[in-house]
Length: 197
Image 1 (cartoon, helix red, strand yellow):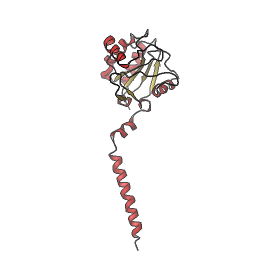
Image 2 (tube, rainbow, N blue to C red):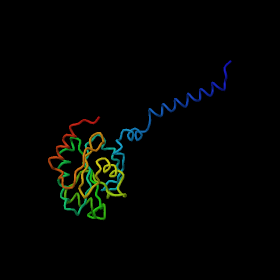
Image 3 (cartoon, one colour):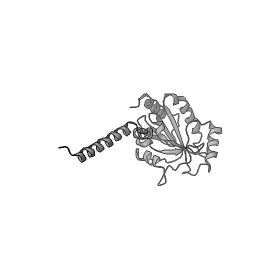
Image 4 (cartoon, rainbow, N blue to C red):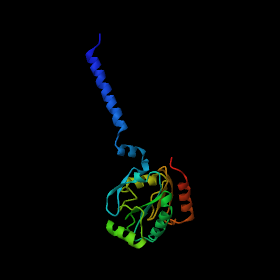
């Protein structure tokens, strides 16, 4: 003899399983995107120009050059080289990400002033973000991760980190390394030649 209660219970379980399977197939894009985003890039920062939140996940699959910048530094002229490298290689998959920082007391107070300075003085077109702490306990988690990978934190303005298409840190470069230096450009070209897995 059939047990009606047991059959109804089994039917309810099957219904729930079917609904779960259907949800998994139509999961929101944000769920899928965050799952495919490398851990190192799973951070959001306000854009310098309008302070709108920007996820670094949008740069997954690109070669990324991360730089902490400042307006009143002896290395500030490197903005020109950064823009030149970005312009030359952006169509091949490179993006330069600039993070103004006052950790070394050489940055303007206002984000809009920084944006105006970068654009009017050096014609910066690569993505820039609002003032960010890059060293010490107050450092943004992104920079803590970058420092942990090679064991180096930015020792000064215009410290550089090169991230591969797989979202993993390749190397870091001190402030003395020009964006157009042979060693950095070769590393960028080598990274660009690798296809994203």
